[in-house]
Length: 306
Ligand SMILES: [Zn+2]
Ligand SMILES: [Zn+2]
Image 1 (tube, rainbow, N blue to C red):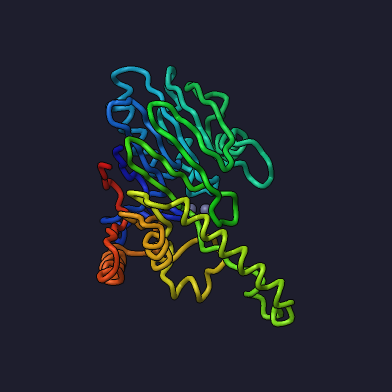
Image 2 (cartoon, rainbow, N blue to C red):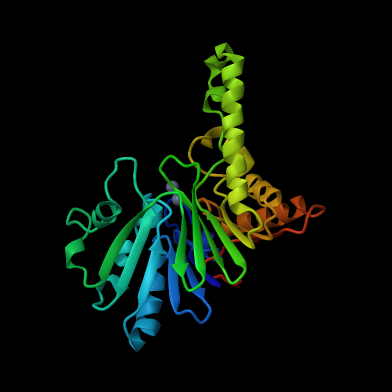
């Protein structure tokens, strides 16, 4: 399995002098499976634009291609690049798009298709030349053929958001793009002092179990790509409930789930290159005397052979 990162930034694209090294594009990851002629893409953030350019200039030149896009959820930073993905304008291109349904219960096709309406964009979804099919996903296990299996798991985010676990050739890749620790939401409430202690204990237990299920989902992964939008201080001061993790949580999860490599991902748009270099060093210090866990801060253009 070969991974290539085309976008690692969260929330909004942020190109400029402060993000030259780690990149400003929003999430898009390319997966290739050795000798299987399969192309899987996770998310269609702005990073899918340069990926599409590469496909047009190299792969499609040799003949029509197929690809599968797995959308983690339909927040803008994860889908906004879709109308700019050049292969969708090319006849013969076959595309399957998978993703979770929204709480409004609109179909995935409608949510994605709405990006291509005249109020937002000069081309309509119905005018696209590629053969595009949409598939709704929930929590499941799928055999994708060619020896590739996929497990999906809901993460903790304000909108249904899926984590993906791909297994191929004895290797495991897990993604937890937009997620924060499950918690007892009532214990954050000041009035909660009046709450029945038994009810509170049950809710604490429910949150603990959900966190445990997530660790099972990550268990023994060779690579875990995990949300690290905030520092612990930022998270605790004003970001609880916004659906994102902090560096220490990503690392603790990786350690607890016996992960080999954790890739810190979904960088805050205001996180500069200098800050990310420093955070990477500090995170490596954190695990220095613990189990052997390799920590990498995701960078645009980064390739990993698994
Ligand atoms: Zn996001
Ligand atoms: Zn999100």
